[in-house]
Length: 138
Image (cartoon, rainbow, N blue to C red; front, top):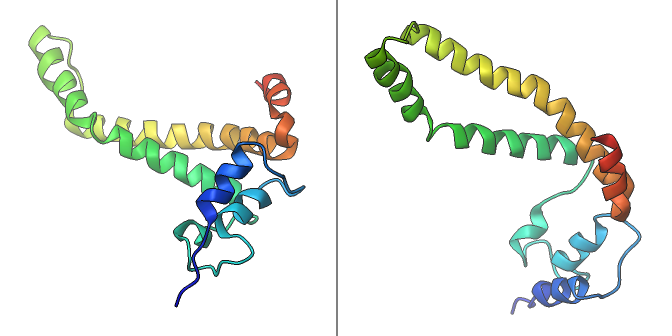
């Protein structure tokens, strides 16, 4: 018979003012997995918060960014090739449109990734007192 994991109750207790571990993210992992649970009792316990946390966060943010730009792509095509052409403002070819689209993605990755990494590093380094440090960073 599999053991039951009481991770939601532990997480609620920690959020409502329970004990905290000195490790910055250890209390989250301990509340999800708990000492009496195996790694397969709860689906979130398989997430590892090790040295690649900032890279994982950057990858997650940019995947969401890229996925959120895909639904607006048909509207951009319509605006560029139908509306602007109708009023005589369009000087964009389809190949130039695609090249500009990929250049904007690359530029957002090149400029956004270091800023996001610095932001996340300050957030991780400062712990619970991250707000004044991030205000100073910004």
